[in-house]
Length: 494
Image (cartoon, rainbow, N blue to C red; front, side):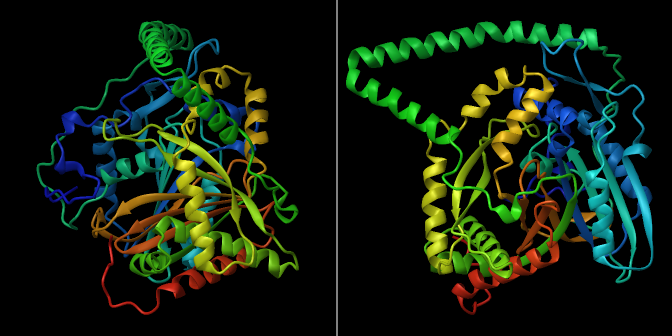
């Protein structure tokens, strides 16, 4: 599945690493944050949180080889074979255990579209599959190969539950299925599949409580160390200690307080309907535009999205000055194992008024830089142990109160800068679609071989004219890119 040569900035493929050291999803018990995401959708279907990735392939891959690749990946990453076992009482978090009835044929599927079929037809299939609830008795992922496109291309879609991983963890997982050459890799390192596990809800309860008790001394020790450190600081410098406490308290207030703007009445509806759309822009072009305003690619991306919201409102005869925005901020470090969820949720009032694109970019940059420096950015993670113990309906109600006022959630995930293949087919584009629980629009950007691929997941109860919104988004991107002027063909990587 790989050529054995590591490339800086590229997630390692199968033969680039010692597979005995692969630790994707090493923690078998869900974190408190993941527990909340898993449980609350039972009470409120609008909070379903699938993460979807769609590879656009230059041709259909070799099916037998694709099946073997998934079988191999399920040996290397046992989480692929694991279902979620809920404890008998909600006193502990769910546990991942190897499904004793794991059936790859259920998870990996293949369809051929009737002629004539376009990319949009294939994307509709992806959307439909994305909105279907997971079978909670099986491992929470599905993959599908979609063939029959009129231009000879194919689509490969992977859908995972957010409780399994965040966006970056998903990229790390998919990297194991990608190769940097079209030809098969002979004698690929392998290991035996994990043995089936007969974990019962009672056993899961015992395991969870046991792990909580095992972690308790460390947590108590940490609290003691923090208390001693705080006391020492307070004794040595009471003024500074008071400033630190007040600073953190104020940060908590800012993080917990909803953005200083109201959701647009035009986008007030929330429902189960979802609509997938895609746009793309050259990474060098977006970089030049960002640099022209003294900003980053992420600033330019957010400015284009906000410009799209302004245009969409203008098309409906309305004005908008700002919209409430949510943005996941990665907390993942080099020490973290692959997979799982390591992010914080930031919220702010996004400038969507009639601004010049460069000024909008600069305002976005100031807001985002301030958000990343908030000491209490991870306060929701700290509160997750309490939130995850709430009854599912109460937890869902709390989350809706936090997210339903968001018009936009925007994510930016690092992608792959070199050509990669899937079972012999070259991946031309990779479009991500993040979950949209409670928000009107979820937009996700991933860079792929010099192209920014943007996947947009719309709640159709909020955005009632999806095609118009996508037109507005394209115009918003064009407006931002124009700042960079004509390029010289260079990447302009900072």
